[in-house]
Image 1 (cartoon, one colour):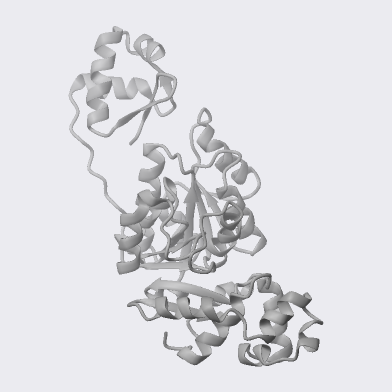
Image 2 (tube, rainbow, N blue to C red; image 1 turned 120 degrees about the horizontal axis):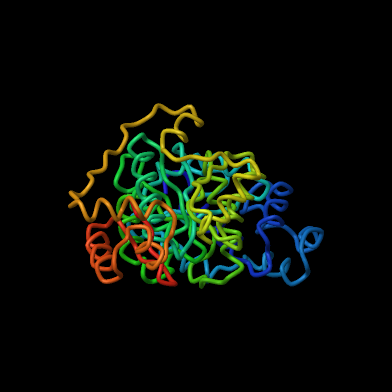
Length: 362
């Protein structure tokens, strides 16, 4: 914690952990009194001009000292930090949004907080193709030096983090819980990788569970720390569209990957494109838009195909297709078609979708 000594950290924690004290009101108190220590030392009557009586009494009584002690114990563990509004390590882009959090809990690399970054978000129930797209875009952008920011959710978020960690830019996860909780639990290994080689960030106090209301708040930080936001697969009700809306309101670039007109997971991206988001189909589209030197393109090996597999893949096209329709196109029986599809699935070129449909992956 290079910019906040333990005594100052104690004051910040005692104040930020006071129940009922919102970040907006805390910023007003800091503006009025000058520092957390001064706020904690202010008279009850002076505090009552800003906060209800019980909150003023708690502040005047020294704030949440017990909570602060628990957080200070966490702070003594390796690679754990708190970063406050006045610190040089505080993400400078967050100072441009309307409601920057007064204090951030950070685990991992502080240097990533002010790197040039791009948010990549999307569906938790992503398709194989969507996850692969997210990982490949993240890997290419990270290789060009851009840090990948996402929300540690399943699906697109997890794929984006893994792609980011594979490149020099690494990855930052903004989470909706306290940093002593990993949510979802299935991403525990990924969270450990981020703590070791990237960064985990939260504005929520230690012990904060995964409350539904916290995740939209978290989304404003994902976009706020980024130069732009790329949406990869999103249904019409996806939380990713909230992140894209925040990005637009914050003056960030919004990018979207198009998909099949038949896919529900493409509907949200298509709406964003209609609303002015930039359609991209290559990582260099984003690098060019951000005026960032383009990194090396990622070359993908194509598995060898026998004539039957190549023919069926050609008949399948790029939109989801039912088995009967594919049999008719290829003029093959159902058993033969299903057998070839299985081989294509094993080679990672086709995935089965709900409703007996199939879709190309590459």
